[in-house]
Amino acid sequence: MDYRQLQLFLAAAERLNLSHATEAMSIIQPGLSKSMHRLQRELGTKLYHRRGRGIELTEPGPALAHHVKEIEAQLAEALSERVSPAASSATPASARALPDSAGICQSWGGARNRLS
Image 1 (cartoon, rainbow, N blue to C red):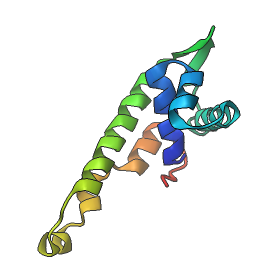
Image 2: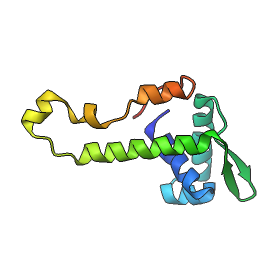
Image 3: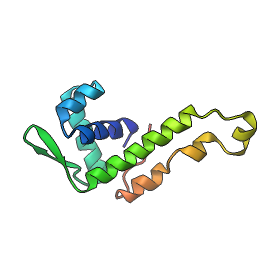
């Protein structure tokens, strides 16, 4: 999985509508659908069902959305940190702020870890 897939999933999960997610993320519908299918295949679970004009999250959907929000918050924190040279030599900001993506992937059935 990659970071863009997670962002696209979160946009869909928050809006419960793939069309609204495509507009918010500036992507065309086939691109979003392909990304969602690939993410579900890599995780080995269905994250949503189509319902009329929207989607309904399956049981794992809200849990993954929660993890993605945490990743985004931690990434934003890491990018906004101002680390002094003395502090950065002791513990890199990325080591303090970024999540254990390998652990998250393993908790989702051993999905490939390729956050980029």
